[in-house]
Image (cartoon, rainbow, N blue to C red):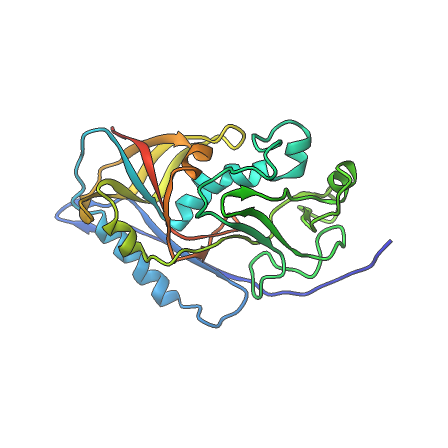
Length: 286
């Protein structure tokens, strides 16, 4: 057997607020931060960002249903696009026939702008550690490179079954539970364009800052309410939207990535995601 131990520090801050004006209340806005160090950690900045989002959603209007472009905030991208990806690169799901990417190694699964790396050694990464829950050294694994699927994530059991080496992705809920596969820090390679640059590229679409709905991890189908959303026309934000529905498929959307933003951040899903602009999404007015 092995006997290993490590120590670490983590800090998180979460804030929820609403804005009111002339009797109208916005939908609730939230902002948060996750860090392994106090360096750069600012509750004031988080509060200001949450307030801006709440104020931005006042005066919301309805729009007609259409198919168009959508800018997903980092949190929405982590949930809607990369939730199904995390499930599909899990070697246990692959071996149980629960991954649509099971036979796609070496094949293109997304637009070439997308590169994904699981990095258990990321300095100050939220999910970083010297070793995983089985004592296997953590490592950096290229999962998708320029749109091409390169690797799944393995623990010792699934690696042995596939005649592979573990990628150091075993995790436990507690010391008494069996290990299962988990991402460490799943990094989406950022692009060079700011959120404002992404907006300037939208002809007819919306920005989504919060998503409330269903995401089927195995199939990739998603549908739900786009909250704290704004209508964008000809590269300009026109007005906030009353709760609008979106639907589509994550795996198809990955192939319709128009741009990947530069604003990557750590999300609560363990994914370091930037804003992502995708095309041809079904947008339905409630």
